[in-house]
Length: 179
Image 1 (cartoon, one colour):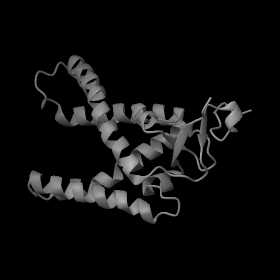
Image 2 (cartoon, one colour):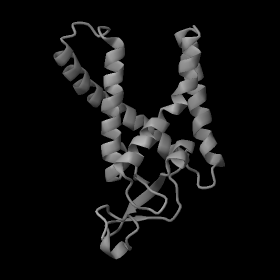
Image 3 (cartoon, helix red, strand yellow):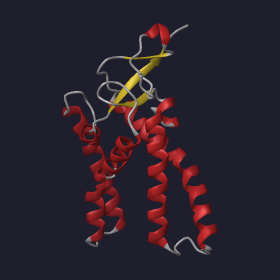
């Protein structure tokens, strides 16, 4: 018997059902992503308050790179924890789950791998910024790159983002079973 829940259990014994190989629409995933960003303000606020208290920072730019590293770790813990449980709050709202290819919950290790791979799409705009391109132009490049990254999922056989394919995870649309 596995300690991880199996999300492919028949409808009669589970309050949720997952359509086999059905990825959420790109529109649903991007809306979830936007909502996740809004919810992360709370995580950033609490983590930054903790960082400022522990480091006795008096200004937001004090220990800037250490703060960014701390937030990267906090985000990693947040996402790995919730993805290993199946979904974040935003994903729950938009009826999206992160599962293994077999439809089961992913491990903490796989969730951390997914988290790191999720950041890879951010590297091209960051590289552009490091060359001295003005911030406004980098933001335009970032928006364009996000659009390209999202559209590339349309070419994947199961409509998954490429970081999910590399991490051995998949996003699935689930619906609550009617009582």
